[in-house]
Length: 137
Image 1: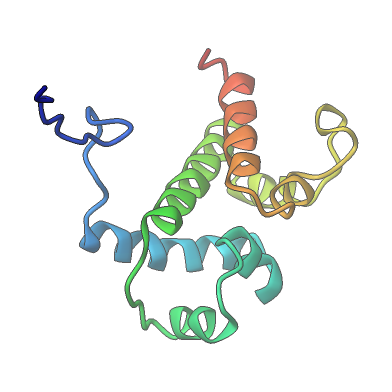
Image 2: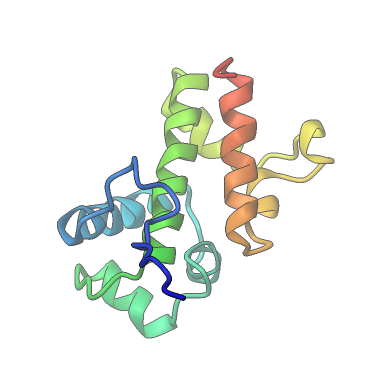
């Protein structure tokens, strides 16, 4: 009995992969976003999937190395969160501050509290919440 060879596909073959150049741009933008959010190094590293301290220090200095698929996805989701906040708040400073404010819809926790649990699904959930808040559903 012979079996046909099935070619593997990505989980979302309709979406293009994030290129190395795009990933490097995402990394630089993420550093700037985290500055605007006034995150500590430990907060930033946690949101980036427990990034090593030396790697984060290098990123802040502009040295971006290899970026794996999980990290590319995390940064893309974080940019979606930023985009959602920019839609919701015409004043960018209010959106940046919102990250730390307690929110009844998040069980009294802040968005940062939710994201600091460290799982990529927490980032996805927050992004989905913001999308729903701005009426994207």
